Length: 417
Image (cartoon, rainbow, N blue to C red; front, top):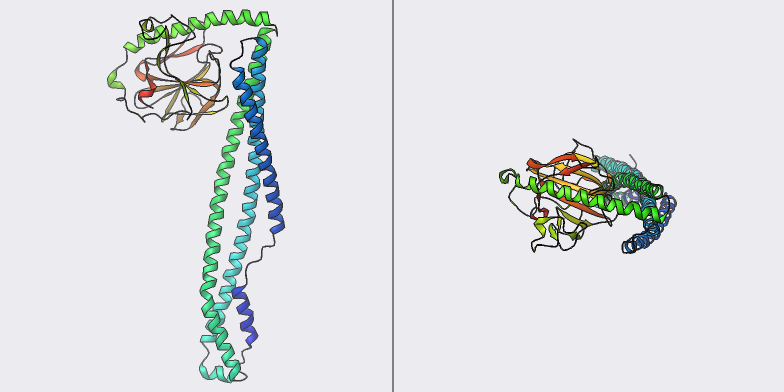
């Protein structure tokens, strides 16, 4: 049997050949599109920052119809830009997933090619090893051919470990690409949910703007008259809540609530606290609360804490539980609110929301999205009002204007956060 050294040369080439990536142009085009999306993202982020400044500056302006409309318009423009930002991120993430899919396909082909090459090489070496010494000598044209073939086989055996290492590296790359693809898919789903929420917030803001223009008839005099009446009604509702909760506070069963300890509840949004719990130095309705008139403040009582946020920011559940209430008090007190009943005897309230994302009876986990922040109800700016009640005292009752109002014996949230 004559063994042609060219056979070993071909096998040697198979051993050390590197995978060819013929899809470079396609990937380059995809990367260019991804880079363009990134540039758009950066531009939109600049726009959003400018609109945020406009909204922030409008908080300090006098309460006129013109300023109220300007504030709403700035808020709507900010939300529109945030929607476009999320849409752009979705497009960019989809492109990344497409690129990873191409990578995975190519890596699979390269891996299969390397495996096939290795199989052919091993078969050739096995065939060589099974040939007896005399057959090798007789099959070779001369002694030099025999040595050449032996040298090729030696080189193949030496390099086969490198081939195995290459296959191992390809497998690792493939697993990493699959993991990255799964990460991007999860990010894509998150962005789609975010877009849905942002769209709801934007729609709610547009509805509020229409309501303002309709009720004021776009006239400053009508707006101010409505505002004066509304302010008196708001103060009445605030006082009603205070008086009801003072009684409910006496009904708190200490054995039904957990011992005060930091970390029992998670912060519903990680941001700056702008107002603490208890008697206030300033309040919307001064000198209305007797318990705060004896050197503890100047008459204002706050039954929770306020946390700064931007309209449209996601608000999360502070602890596992069941949604026990979802309501809208329109332009009074808490505006749009939700409550969650927890197994440890506490109930938490999330108020001034622009959008509620849960329904009564729904089970939630700590950190789950429950709504989006806003400035609904009795509020001078976007923030989250967060209260904690003893569940054994909690109830929902209509206020004097018929709106569902959460009531309970309030506890200091800072004792549990």
